[in-house]
Image 1 (cartoon, rainbow, N blue to C red):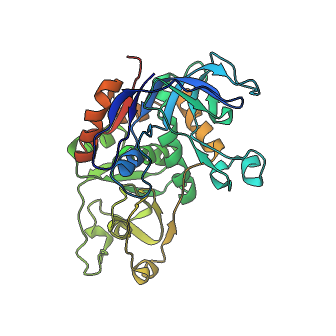
Image 2: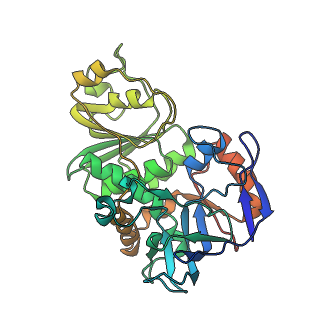
Length: 341
C-alpha cells in the first residue's frame, strides 16, 4: 500500500510503498477514508517530547471502513463504517471496565492513518450512525480531546469562557463551551484566518493577544482586559512556554484554568500569582470512551460548527508539502488526508 513515512527530525515526510498491514487475530483492518493532521504529529516530527523511529506512519484521527476482521474478533464486521478511538488498554482492569483506557497501565496508542489501510484494536472501532459522514467522523478525536478538558473545567450554563488559541483544539473547546451553555465565549487569536473561523463558530468576541497593564501580568481591573470582563474558565490551547501563565490573566478570582495546549517544554508558572487569584489549575489528558462516543453522537445530532475548522483535504502525495506548511505557518487549521481521492 501507499503511505506517508516519517524519516527523521528535520527531514520532510516521504510517500512510499510499504507492505499491506495484515490484521492479527484480535485486530480489524480499516480502509482509511479520512485522517486528520494533528498538532502532536507536528511536535513529534520536530523532536518535541517523543521522537518516533524512522519509518513510522503518523495519523490517529481516523475514519474509515472495516474491510477484514481477525478470527477472534466479535462485535465488528466487514463493512462497518467507523471512527477510530486511537487509545486502547488491556480490557480487563478497573480503568478499562470504566471506559477510561487512557488510565490503563497497559494503554497503547494507535497510529498509521497517513496510509491506505491500518490495522486497529476492535475496541477502537466506534461504529458510526448511518447519518454521520466519514468526513465528519475524522473530527471525533479532536472533539473528544476538547470535551475532556471542558468536562474537567465543569463549565455550567451562564459561565464566561475565554479560549486562548483558535487551532483545532481551541475551536473544538469553543464548540463544547457553547454546547454546555456558556453565556459568553471569547477567543484570543492572532492569525486572521483562524480568527474568522472562531467568528463563524459563534464566538461572542475574538481578540488579539494583549498583555494586561499590571506589572505582574494580571489586570488591575477586569475592564483592562480586551473583552472587558474576566472569565470563569480560561482554556489554554496553544502549548507554548509562557502561555499558561499569560492565560491566567484572563481569569476571574476563583476561576478555573485548563491546560489543553499540552506544552512539551518547560513552562514556568508563578504559584503565588495563581494563588493570589485562587485559581484552580487542570491538566486533562486524552478522553474517556464515553466522551469519544459523545463526540460522534453530537455530529449525528446535526452539529455543523466543527466542520468550519476543516480548511483543506489532500491526497497522500500532497501530505509532505502540506505537513511542512503546517509546521511553518498557522494559516491552515484542520487538514484532512484522503488516501483514496
